[in-house]
Each structure stands twice: as structure tokens, then as C-alpha cells.
Length: 603
Image 1 (cartoon, rainbow, N blue to C red):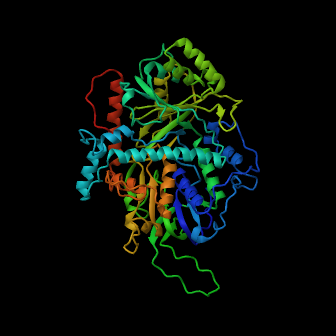
Image 2: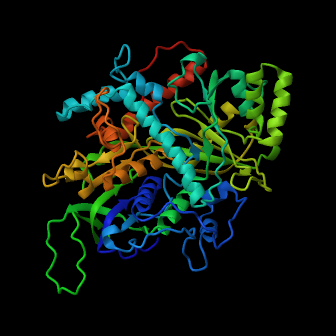
Image 3: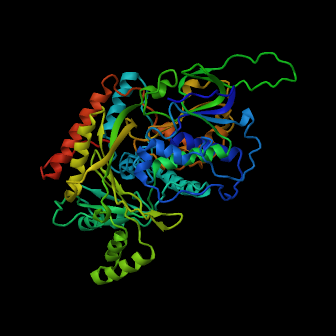
């Protein structure tokens, strides 16, 4: 157990939660307040390369030794910036975390750098009010109607297709920002531009002429079942037609999530953000006290709109609080709006033993398959694939599918992107994740279920051992969309409305949580969106045609995807678990050819 350091008396912004969402918010604020767009100068320490991904997730002591200097402080890049005001309380930003940075969901993530949200764009568009034949009968819509009736609250307003397209576009901007952050601050997080393959257990109609608004980058390619199996390395003799097709998006990447999280912390600290670990928030209070009378020569800290109190009794005054935690229950004393807004879901991952050359995911296979698709000739494909191999050797892609309890997997990286150097110790492990549980189960049962899911995809790996198994809790809102917005319970009538926007920059309680296991890119978006909100920077154009009158992007999430006032507690876990059981059973029967009626959409 660590010991909490003393908090300052005042900070302009206090961010609760040291995961990716909180750190992205801190970094975006610090850049906008303090930093100039300057160049990163050479570090004073050697960059450690070719480090094994899985070791950093599990060997905590080894990780701490690698990531710390002899004085016990985390290494930070030497950035040139003009942040002379970073030590002034009225400009200060602090991050508090109840444990250590990256110890929960952010550091244990699957490492798939994919834009978008947990809910596919086509599903969101199908529920849009201007969609042809609109009739929203999804599970979230039904629950929203029931909860609205029980709590006498109006349901969230209906959105248009253009609104959700704009929201999806924000995540593609966030992906570009994330690449910029990794490059600018020289975050050694094993970033690999590998692309991703999403396979489907359902039949796919390859209507490529109708994918104008389809989720994915401009170069997204539809794949047949044979192409999916070839890219994923599923032998034809072992293939049981598990996947009916899929799509390949070259714009996605893979990353070590723990190193990325620690790198974000280093970058934020380099711009003056102060991070306090082992400091857990207990409650937020409105500050109604006047400053004590003091001598004119004595510094008087700003009053602050709120008092944030920790479990150890420390108090810090602040104008803004940003709640970026969620996998652990948020108490009513922090936010009544978020306390019952989501259900915790457990998900798990495993690292196989070293497979070396037996690893089914191979570098360069994507080049060959795509070339074959373009040329339509096996001979041409071999030539094009060989040329691509020799020039680019596209790394093995990130993989996933569309089970309700989706599977996702990747190969341990063999290419360090920023140095374009092959990993001398190519272990060829597979990092495989799956399952969605509402209760923690014994590790032996988790291992058995993960192995069953892995061998369903790769029957040839049935005898491969798992060297490590780990997991954690995710915050799943009832509609599976991120919760980004402002807790209006803390607002008052004294805030002036200037152009409908600047009233928010005077102070308030904000939140960014509930990314539902799909947060590496959306957290970067949330950080920028909330930084603009706190600083009163307009970032969204008015659109009278689509009846959009917002000045800032956070208002889209706040209005159309607000937190639910009730998650079904005290039977929320049992109810969600039963629902997942039914949908998983439908998947299992459907893969075996049993004709079944369609279920309402779960997202």
C-alpha cells in the first residue's frame, strides 16, 4: 500500500481518476493553458526498446524498475514549452487516483487502437429519428422507456443520423491526436500500425456500393470467409465455417495500454500537471465559505467553487471537478447522476506460451490477401504480396469478432514502429481476450472458458498453455455509449449565460466514464472535448438544418446519451448477467445452424 501525499489547498481543476480519460483531460488542459506547439528535444535517457509486452502487464516490480529513475521518480520527456504559470494555483491541474496510475481498466486493456464506440455506427443510425422505417425496439430503448416511466423523467431526445456521424467523426480526429501525442512526447508504448480485422459469425452481404457511411476508414475492405481465415491463420482443414466474412480496416493500430497510460502521465507531468496516487475521492461539497481575513502581504488562495474531500480527510478547493472513474462504484456523495448509471462487467485476457513460428498470425499476410483481392489472380497476388513483404511487411493485424461476448486477440508485437526494428526476441505469443461476466469467477473457470473460446477459433492451439491470465471491471452504461457531460446537480443560477456557452467555464462538475471496453481512442476524444468545455472554447458548428444548436461537442453526449438514473440495482448484475446468458446462447445455437428468431438489439 502506498501513502498519499499532501494535496494543495487549491487547484483550478481536480481530475478524479488516473486512467486514460483523466490523463487525456489533464494533458489537453495543460497544452491549451500552458504549452506552445514546440518540438520535443532529445531525451536525457536511453529509450528501452524490444521489451516484451506481457511482462509489463504482470511483472509489476520489473515494470517499476524499468519505468523509474534511481531517485524513484517516473521518467518524463524533456519538452520545451512556455508554462511559466504552471505553479500558479489559479492555473493548476491535479489528478488523483485511489491506486496507482494504470492499475485498473486503462492499464489492463486489450490494446486495440480502434476509432468509434462500442455501438456500431450502423446500429446508431438505424435508431436515428430520421432513419427510414424508424422504430427503436432495442434493449436500451425499452429500458429507457421503463426507467423514464418509473422516475417520471422525460427520455433522452432522439438524435438524427448526422449527429451520430459527427460523433463518430470525432473519434477519427481523436485517433490522429493520439498518434500525435505518442510522437510528440516520445511515448515508448510499442505502437504498431497493423490494421484490424473484424470477423462476423453472421452472414454478410458484400454490398460495397452502399458503404458510404459505413464504419471504418476510407480504405476499409470487405473480406470473404476464406480471406478472413487466411489472414487469421485458421487452417482450412480445421475451419468449421465459424466466420462468414468480415472487414479489414488499415487505419487501426495496436499498443501496449499500460505503457501508453504511463506515458500520458509522464507527458502531463512535463507540462506541470501534478499527480497524486493512493488518494481516493470521498465527496464533493459546494464551497460557501468566505476567505479568512489576512494581512495584505500574505497570499490568499482562490476560494474555489467546490471542496473535494478525500477518504483520508484532505480537502482541496477547486473550480472544476472531472470524474473519470467508473469501474468502481461512484458514490452518491460524488455524483448522484453517475452512481447508478452503469453495470460493472468483468472481462478477461490470457497470454499464451511462446508459439514462435507456430503463431498463426503472420506478418505480411494481409498484403498478400489484399493484393489477391485486387488482382483476382493468384500469380499476381504472390508477386504483389512478395513485393509488399520486402518493402513494408505489414504487421499481423489486431483481430476481433462480433460475438455478444466478443473475442479479441493480437500477436505480441514484432515491430517497434518508431525505430522500424525487428524484435530480436520474437516470442510469437497470442494475447486473447473474451467473456463478459457480471460477477467475478474463479481463475480456473476463467482459464477454461478462455481456452474454449481460443480453440473455437484456432483448434490447432488446443494444447497450448496460458502463461498468464488477467482481467478487470469495465463500466458499461445501459446504452453502451460513453458518458460525457456535466453534472447539473452542482450547477446554480448565478452562472451567467454568455452566448449559451461561457457560463460553463466558471466552474462545474464534469464526467467522462463508461467507455464499455472501447476506450483507447474515445478517451482521447473525451479529454479534448472536456478541456474545451472547461476553458469555454467553442468546438461545434451550429446547424439549423439538422436542428443542432450546440456550441460544444460535449453537449451532444450530454443531451442524447445521458446517464441513466437507475441501473436496476439491487438486481442489476443478475439482470444483466441473465440477459447476456440468453444472447450468448443465441450465438451458440446460431453457429450450429439452429434457426432462431432475431432478438432485439442489445446495444
